[in-house]
Length: 457
Image (tube, rainbow, N blue to C red):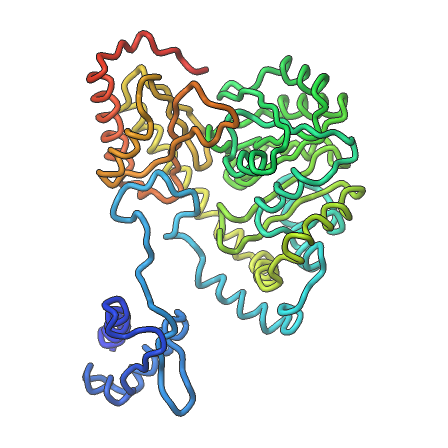
């Protein structure tokens, strides 16, 4: 029965992929399918029910089963080596568990999910998020949380809305998350940068910037930095908060991968000034489901009404269905269970990537050494054409990212970013070996002198 059941599933999908069945077409009757596969009608019904659950077909009462849409095998880099994609590893995405939560959310909330909801987000979800955030050393109350459509929306609103300090300029790390760079560029927001390396930032320069440049807020990724993989120490975080307090600068803390920090004693900056100086942004995209588009921001009370007003102008409210499903997922304990497998997988991948870089990259090519997270950055000799290197690797089905878009200003140091989130760990060594081969070959063609390459600290 299992073989027949699977056979029906694969046959229907293949018919759609080959365009023999298209959106809206009717499937053969249950009787005809039973004859075709020489199985019971019961087996056919179970197979069609499974296809219905996968949203590939739907049933019309007294009519039969019809194709929902043109089913296509997901387009991914699964046949190559994917150091480019930054979403969660698809092999551990909790699709079925979350589908149960969506169904329960519909049953539980019914009409509430399909109308405009509270502008700050479902109160019951905010209560659940407050409980969850305690595990990350973020202690607050539901009234200070606003649910947003991903962290990107939170950063967009914060960048454009006025702040209580009345200041205009934004300070960012250099390099930083490209989504924030795009917000600042597209909205023509006056921005300053402070250089970040794996050794941290220059605190004397930070104080000078705070003192003399009318800084509205400092946008910072305190751990699992994108793209470097850098982590600040607790002492450094305390120092940053103290300087922000001294010069009336707000901090926007993007703690998107807090769950992957292996240091259980590491605190967010929020822990050192929870009453309003630090605005805490937490996304669920990277460790959970990116398409869910859910994040939360913890705001000082005096900024909530302004934030909600600016957010309301963009989307009225974040999807209530996604909010209700996430609430059930958190409350059930499924999320904690999911995180255990997530942490184990990504720690293993990052360790493998570091081993491969140490083994294959020439000694004149430097790379960051993250303790966890998704990202590692490789710094290249100045004469290398980064786009050409990426193109040559793409031809070999090896995909990675040019780190130049993660700098606000033109970056003199050429770099590429590698993500371990979706790459198959068994392909990491071969991928880095190929990357090293191309770098060495490009250097030899230019008769490159490795001694001329300045190290990046």
